[in-house]
Image (cartoon, rainbow, N blue to C red; front, side, top):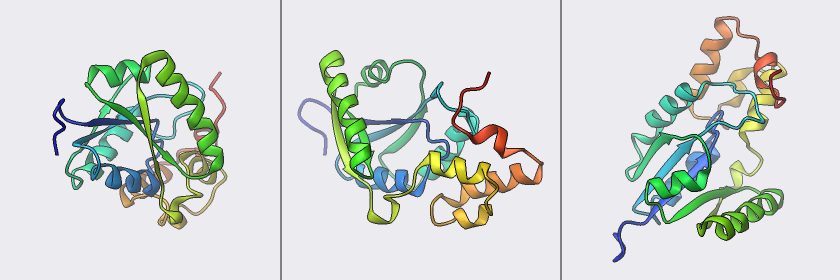
Length: 181
């Protein structure tokens, strides 16, 4: 499926803290369109981390092992710089609803205007339209039964959360989206 100008590489950037079944849905559909999909795992300084960057990267690599054409990489700095460094042709973004579209549309216009990089949107499956990493972090922080997250996150994420819970980690301090002071 290589394009005459070279392989069609898409970068799917995000914090993925944690990766959700909705993210995986977008990745599985994207590998049917692109020669390679790079899941670019980064840090958002506006949010506290539930999982470390290395833990997120390890979980994502495990999950992508069964998805030919997809791989994970960590990055820092501007997404546009990372996209160029891996010779990608587009940024891939998942869209759940109209609120996502408004925000992502602004980013896409900025990426095209400033960096000349196009964005391709893939709608998430209906069953994942209400799922977000932020929602998962909030539910965990508020003390919900972690096993109830099973339809929303992959089993490896549940295993990591359960292990953290057994070690007595206070999720309330980790998961709320306010910068650490």
